[in-house]
Length: 120
Image 1 (cartoon, rainbow, N blue to C red):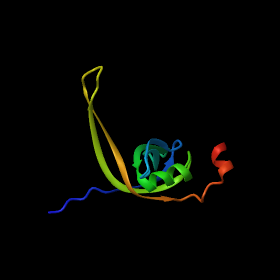
Image 2: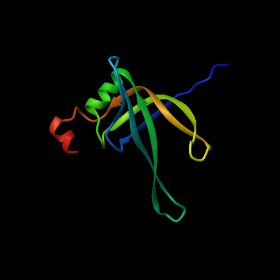
Image 3: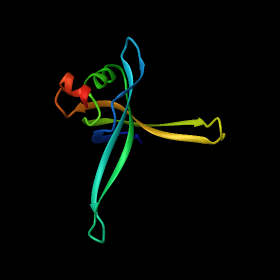
Image 4: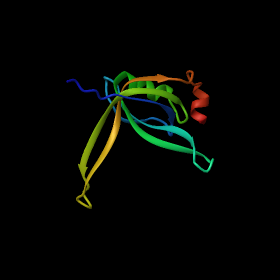
């Protein structure tokens, strides 16, 4: 039996893309992506549940993310989930984080004007 590790997100960047590593092949970039679910409670109150996702992008996609995306950009991301584990040096506790490693990104905002992206 085959397995599948795929995630699709549609949301907004909470901050500007962060270059973690830049090489000749491209950039390894971290994005902070917010997705929102709106719902109504039993007491007829409207609520909003915001989830934050860490998305990693590399090579030519990373370069494009650095050039065209900024805080508030709306993006579609498709990729796979990957878990990371490490030992906390202070507490010696084992810690975990899950990130999305993007294989596809669609920029849903038009190409930003250089002046407006700096001011944002």
